[in-house]
Length: 128
Image (cartoon, rainbow, N blue to C red; front, top):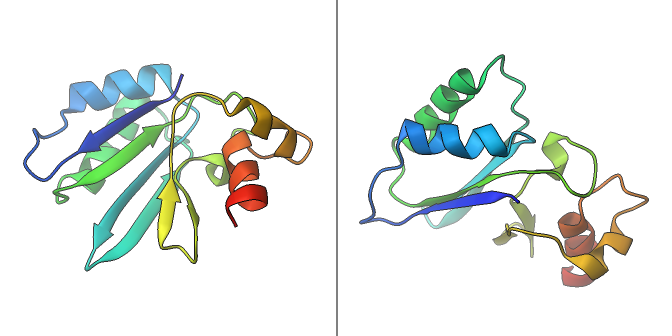
């Protein structure tokens, strides 16, 4: 199952060891969401770096200056393994974003013949 790490403003910093553990079992891509100047910012990547250690350093550099964020480590169950299928998924004019763990069983039928994730199918066909 996917892993989500939520960092609150007064919460403990996320360590490299925690990032490593999340990536070790969820290596199908990552996504990050946070607010900057009251605007939602999202960033996705596909873990195409040569090693988990390189991915950890890449992610750590992204999150180091942030006070609050959510990061999703994907374990693909539906849809291609690609950056496009990584959480978070934005909707409502990029004002909102969604990431979750698990499977949306009824949404799997919305996934365009298995190319996109159940979550993206749900957002495109139900939330928008």
